[in-house]
Image 1 (cartoon, helix red, strand yellow):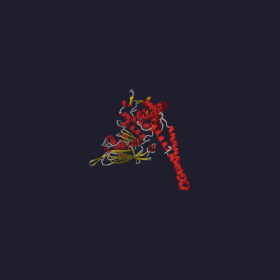
Image 2 (cartoon, rainbow, N blue to C red):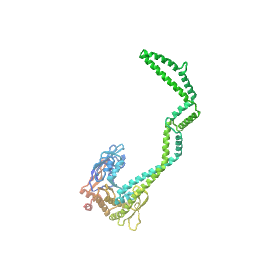
Image 3 (cartoon, helix red, strand yellow):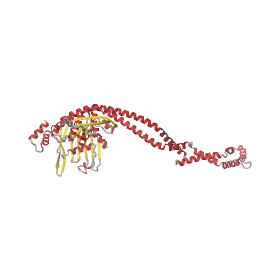
Image 4 (cartoon, rainbow, N blue to C red):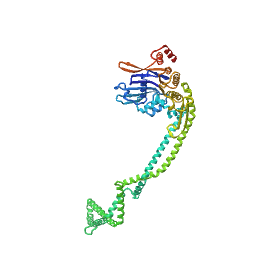
Length: 550
């Protein structure tokens, strides 16, 4: 429920603060007095985009603030989802700065316009000529049928199942697209992989092969060096081992002359043993090393293969080739497994489609059961509004596609007079008829949904007399279940309000201001009399006004 509205520096309004109560509030005023300004300000605090033309004073800040009593709207989940402080008395504020920037707040927490708009849609339903046109659209008509059918839970389940189905379908299409792309590269990747696998790559292989190649390719040099080394150690006349043997004998004789000579002898002995061991290894290496042209050719061939693969893949290490081999193996494996994945995904899609189709069928059955009830209520409610022969024809049939609100095509036809052909609302219903139908629909919805504050902007345009009186009765009856506002030019409607505000212009010097005041009983009589007969108040107009109020 809208409790208070404060407007500062907006259009013709300097500073306006007005409080509202529950029930039926009517707002009247002459054409051009500024009733649309009020709606414009309210739409900003409900999330509409703003511009600098909204500012009354270009160098000042525009602030619009609305207080709502929201404890009956079930909005705690919304506040929790958007990380906002929940307060039963919630304050929504919109600020427009001279720079053109706009800020929005909910209970003093900054929010985006999207969040503000979502909350605004749950707080106030502003009926305008644009919303009346919604009546001609199937989505709105189905929403009405679903309200009477109590399809809320079914629709929620349907949306969740539809979301799952659409996700599976998207994943299937991605798999098919991936398979199509992968198949193009599969043969080439398979060839590259086979080429790498046949090389039997392993870490350190290149170093081992290069070492072996150097040895095989230099056998004669190696043998020559080994032979010379062995000769240096074992030459009978100048060999190192012979000389060291003599030195060893000399130092052995010195051992008896003290520990220093013993250590020297040990060192010579150690060197002699080491060189003797080296001589043995040199001799053994000579026996091992031999020319092997076939092995040399084989090693050279393998090395050239490695070098060719490195050039081909633009790398310099065998480890990089192993990484590429792993990637190719994964690509080839994925391509080979895609067919099975696609098969599994198709099976899942069939299951998901069956689930959503089953729920869509339940929604359709529920709608078909509710339509006779809706038809009866609409026709009976419109009779007092000057449409005694009105008739509706409704039918839902299965659609070929899943829509966001079911799998139904709706036929919603209308005839205003006996003998008239049925036709779509947007083609055969007049503006006045659409307004009356919309009012009745809002009243019916109020019996089945916890509707927010309802604001009607001249929904009674084009009607008069007893019909306008009946429309006022409907809005008055609606106000027992929700807060209702009506901006009206009709005294019959204005007289039904629990509270009555008048919007008017006031000139102060060279400046015009829009004001809004709550009328007391005597002021309401005068206002209604002027609405009935103009500024020249007659006794009959005053008497008629009092009669309307009573």
